[in-house]
Image 1 (cartoon, rainbow, N blue to C red):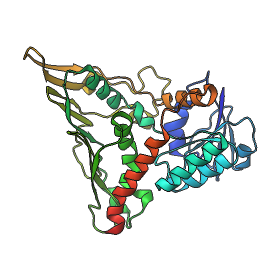
Image 2 (tube, rainbow, N blue to C red):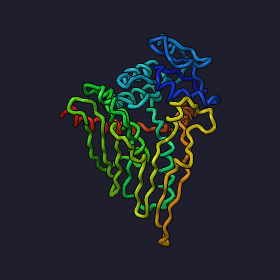
Image 3 (tube, helix red, strand yellow):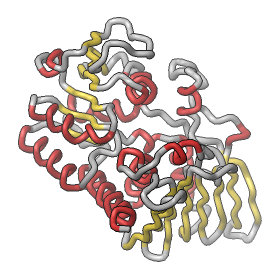
Image 4 (cartoon, helix red, strand yellow):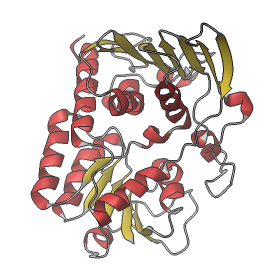
Length: 340
């Protein structure tokens, strides 16, 4: 068993981590959850030790992995603290605020013979896995363009933020999902064009971004906005022979928000109305338009990977260089605002 503890007992831990780590009852033992305040609105898990004393984690030799699920400005200092106490660490995204901090954490882990990894659960989103399946089928031919959108209509959020900060930046808060998907599948781009904006004016929240990543003659666009009353498709993939459109996002978050948990057989699974549409011309010149049954997303695959890495010595599923590249891109994009 891999015995783990959490630093942070808020939405991140209870919505995006614990339902998936506790699901793996044959591999994962959640022993301790730390929060600086005792009162919490989330229901306690039977058998887990809840504490306001961080030394209940650092002083426990049974705890092998510490999960940092706190506000992002604490990711680097708490990750470093966990490593210095001899614990492996899983750090929520964004992994750090700067690439220098990220490199320091990876170097420290290597020095101490420990693992530190970013929690990139969105690699296991249903829509992203389905896109990979379509691309690898070959029916689209050589890829020309991929569009990825993560939109909301939540104008009240940027309107409530009166000054710019990394903690509220949409680029740091959401491109850390989508950029990782691109990097994990396509690798390092040849070039990147950044458009990072504050739609409500200078010194306000970063509430929009549009990044173009170039791979030879293919372009991958990663776009997000808080002001989209009608969301753009989650993915659009154009090839020489056709197009695949996935309108809707992975449904795991939708179900988690409704407290419909992973122990339900239909958790996160797309219904036919959610399936993407594949349209292409085959080698005989015949036209095809068909629905593609969605792959099943599963964030617990991150914890499966951690178990294999820490207990069985297998390679990490999120490579250090992928995390560093992503942070470098976030830094470069946000400099447009910080200089402006």
